[in-house]
Length: 204
Ligand code: SF4
Ligand code: SF4
Image: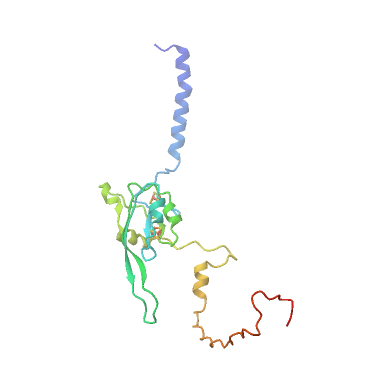
């Protein structure tokens, strides 16, 4: 049985708890009513990775750098025949498969950072939960659909130079060079021309 001393120590604690409860009841709730109310996320949130497959050269850099090994790429080479002006046939990589397994992805963003051709982007879209974990493997087509949800790039700081791509696109197209006239260089006379061992300061 609790003594009078112990009972006295319980009373302040009880009052304290009641005060805290009363204070909390008067405050507005901070619980977000998702999914009825969508969260107001920052535009650069890491929701899902989008693929612009036209930019992808199948260089495999993203797959090699991914710490989780959850990017799968298949490609093959195709030969582009030389144009009518001559030249050589060229080889080009054609992307057959590009998939990211979001059940393994840890959203580190390394793949996006290392892509040298701007083929991968963050989208803030996060509503792609699945009841079957295997459906979290997004293939090329689905990764491409996420591109619609990628926000436009942030505005440049005032006075900052344009991006290199914009400067390059604004340059006028190159005009083809005029053909050079053939050189009319007389062949040196072996009698009068100095030999390779001649002293350059000796004159005639
Ligand atoms: S975000 Fe990170 S873990 Fe996810 S696919 Fe890219 S590199 Fe791999
Ligand atoms: S790094 Fe970029 S260009 Fe290279 S395979 Fe990955 S997405 Fe394609």
